[in-house]
Image 1 (cartoon, rainbow, N blue to C red):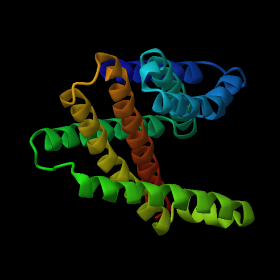
Image 2 (cartoon, one colour):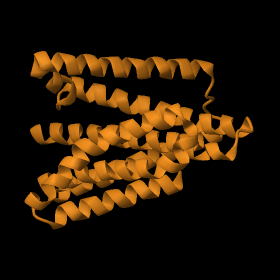
Image 3 (spheres, helix red, strand yellow):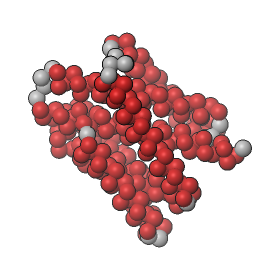
Image 4 (cartoon, rainbow, N blue to C red):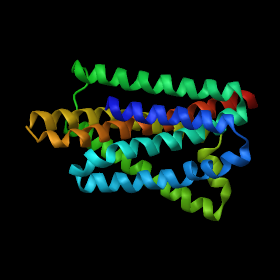
Length: 225
């Protein structure tokens, strides 16, 4: 997990430095790749590793690097658009993400929260609801673009929706930790360790995206007021 997280962070920092250090015309093709191609590639790799966990040893690091490219491009654009404020927002999102994950790890390790069947079923329903609602919003936005702004803009509904997404991602972080623990206690082969790490890093990055969006909404609302 540390290897994958380091790979993602290092790649993201390199991408941010590259985007900030060259003309926008030079960086534009790279930004397009990071903004559109890299996310699609990470989804494909995620499906492959989920279907065949043993290939995670080969694909987990490329997955982390591609996630880093995507994060670096988006955060680099934020720094270009908002200047030092954009950099502060990115840094805050990173710190809050690590804080959330470390706090969740401590809470799980100390047994304050038990990841049992009820929590798993509850998390499944929340995750399914989030996926379905996102699909409905996407389809509705094709008919009425205002629907997208309603849930992904800077209004009150968007704020609540983003906060709920952060909570769901946090709950799933606990479940990925429990999955790894169960695989170890179940005596599964060591070759599955990369799959466990992939599951953990997947949730950390998901949590980062949700926290970054929440902070941007709060920042936008504060400027509007």
